[in-house]
Image 1: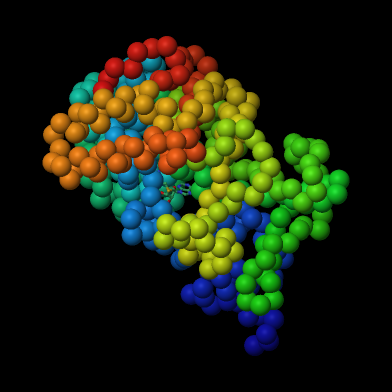
Image 2: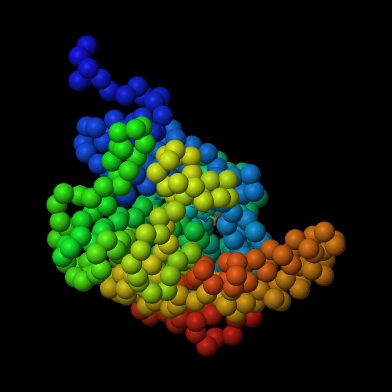
Length: 374
Ligand code: SAH
């Protein structure tokens, strides 16, 4: 067999397979690299293991405090009411992780029997490992559950979409300003067994990219997030729709490289050990909002997570939980709630963006309605 015909063996490491791919097809886009690191069936962060929680790579709001999922659950009920209480409504959670948010939300739905009779939950998940974790967490949730690989497979009808720390995991493309043009930032083999950034040879002609920038500045775009906004807009033309997108990121568009790797709760090298660290990038909320509005949706926010949760009634819920808690539980409840809203922790870097179809009032807490379900 000639050396040319050699294909990597199927169980080769992701690193070896990416080097082989680069040797065959040329450098990868950041988008392709991120997609492979997160979703590769054999070695991707989500596809091959469960990275969320104390023993994993990172922790998310629903895993920090049950109050998060409970408030989001009540938010969904209020939005359903603002839709005129349709007798069928789908709550679609994008990237449900361990299923904790929906488990906490569904506990609050038990207090609203008419809602519980109307709701079905669609869990949008691509990873078989995460699916298994969700199935375990949600086995007693009391709401009908169905899993889908993508939102576009969910049947049409009144829809409430929830996405916590989902958009930050959608792959980004990066461009770098060289003189008067943008070039795409690519990932090549460095010749020493690792990976290195390089520029595309061709200039990028995308007229939507800003036409001026300082030399060597980096700009990120997120095609999958843009596609998601278009899909939400399309669905809103046929039935009432609202969406709640919570993530970490910036309220104003800007330049800069925000791609980051986190492994075992510490920052790691983005290019080292593909699949070993979680990769994500800051959400550009201004860009997301522009895409949502262009798709025909009303957009509200982004509002800092701390303000959002406090306005939904976090303090009252914390007090209710504290009344029934042992001293050890009380400490965990108080510190968890503080971590979600403290501006030095998740209170400001994390933000909430609410989207609604044209006929609907602004979802709480963006409108003037009183939010009193808690
Ligand atoms: N929302 C959860 C988990 C966030 S981690 C929480 O707050 O704890 C991101 C989740 O999105 C994981 O469940 C991951 O498997 C899933 N995911 C990542 N990319 C996806 C995609 N393109 N489609 C569907 N799910 C995806």
